[in-house]
Image (cartoon, rainbow, N blue to C red; front, side):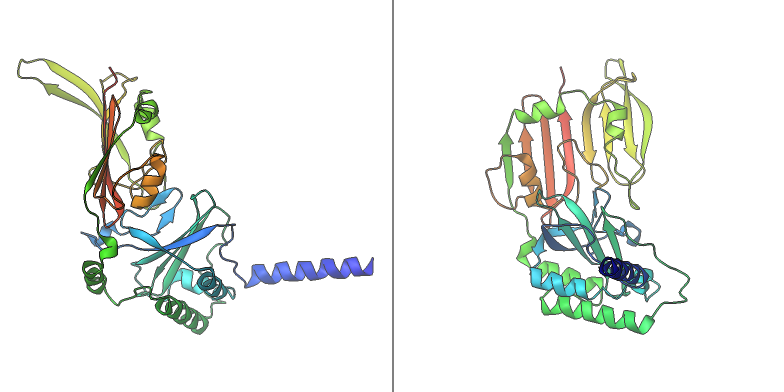
Length: 330
């Protein structure tokens, strides 16, 4: 009995110690992890992404197919955070413009956790399917010298692994220009009747709204009723959903409440289509989602054609930037 009590006491002490100052990352089971660059080709600073991935939403600014990370690197990286990272989650600088993100995937290729870092501002953030400890903003117990050393250690790990880390956006952009690993070339057309089965069910406005995933950078979809007048003077009335920013919109067949989707353009990662594709995914992830693929490895455009449905995927720097859909439901 005394031995059992001793073991129980040790277990409680370890748990309390972990909660008090430790930090286990990642806090969920994963199969592999990839590193991506982000926030490098922004037109406006206000368009930046907070997370490389969060709640089903890829960063719209994410580029590349990702660098597969070796387990030795990940082990060292995870060890750098075991003493707690509250200070780095608060940030050592006043700004935050993350350029690096790591996505952790399960054995089915689904994201289960993500790490995002700004080495210019010394700030990091996390997302996970598991619960993360809250950030303590009171700062009474924060050890800032420890945090500086942690960030230096993480940055050294990245540089030793030949992961690009620069001091400003211009240097990152020059890196992209000189690196062919981010190029897309050519166009591929795939004829597949399976696409009809996925999209000819007749999606209503309320169903399309359910495709919207929520994160800090999610768009909002506004309803409207539009009218078009033909050359012969005939009026056509129809419903639309339009994003509050960017070029994302959905066009429906009529003005009735049960009108169905006939056309769409999607340019933001917070829309997740029924077959699991969203803007921000890597070209190879989109190819895998299609179920069948035969063509060049990194195309600029993939056209998926059915008898009544056509979906076009547009890529830039090996990342999906736009989706166009045309549906004929007659």
